[in-house]
Image 1 (cartoon, helix red, strand yellow):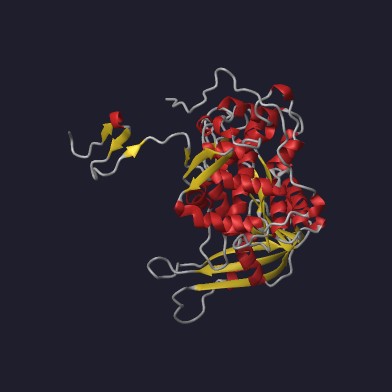
Image 2 (tube, helix red, strand yellow; image 1 turned 135 degrees about the horizontal axis):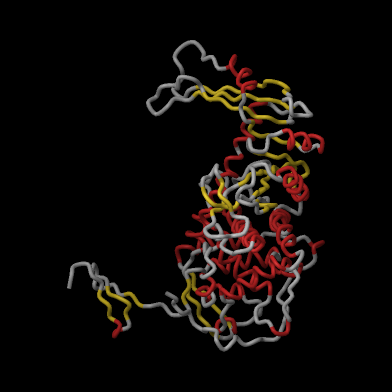
Length: 498
């Protein structure tokens, strides 16, 4: 036998015996073992904040309720929890239907009978998208529910109070598509076929780091791939600010250069909405910058220079209102330690009156929001593979619900001064937890991998400290309903499809 070849010992019940150590044996796991223990944590957050049950109660379900096996809330939990755990392909739902942790977390009936059940299949999950996209009003209900989780986490963990100041970050981001999806188109700037959604995110005090006071996506729309960067931006920003009003007593908006045009800034100023954004350079602005680009006499410091210049009020020909202009000169050395031939610079435009250096730091905090967009694509993401535009928008919104749900756990993991928790780290270190289920005495006991137990202990304690506001009434609980047997063609154990 060739060196390094693994030996299969099926007769002895082993999957294989590694040659590097004959004392090591690998056996095939049974259906009581899971690598998705974090589904139980996700359900605990969902239950504590009464999220998906309330969302399901607001949606219209056209199915005959006496004939269905899976309720709308069970379909929602299965898809949102799967996305939260990093399962973005629709076919993953067939394997997760038999996962013990997923079954215990998703099933909406009490007792241990869930251990012998199975969850919804991929075709049934596709019908969920049809309900969300095809029933009038459901898509807007789903969209309007995005800020609800942020609000409930804020009020439960923050003594039922809004924060004093919050920031809404707005940006577009590309989502690649493959095939003939309705509305997908080639974007010349990104040089790929895509959708180009808009997304708005809320953060307390404009800071996404080390805050447990509620943060996350509050508004999103799917746009066609050929949409201009600022297409629909004013309407979108107004809607996002309206949705975030319940989260903070004062709000401002941060945006990039794609949105700092007169047709966006003038109405925001007239609405009394504070904003700051980067401004595209032009000949008039470059001329204003020239007097401030001169370097000081003498040897430059090793870290280079940075200068913030308040240029006062500026009004372009296409603007109805003058806006404050701030020049930022960044003169940093290259890898060889030498300064560039000319310093770099950019402009900020705002209708705010704070100190220019403070405004620059406030704007730079937007970089964390841009990182969060990258995290969404890397850790959750969505495959917008349906043929219809509305189905793909529903899938995007479900992905953002999952992003907010996992974001609640990320917020609770953060400690001031400690290393931050990005979503991928949270998935791999906390949610993708190994566990074994034992059934007995009408109970289901999950034995958790020891490596993640301290992290879970900390999270469970923090969740226990939440206080649900009494004025909201009691959180939704599972509703008794008749049991419906699975169809005859349903597999009751996992089947490998190749």
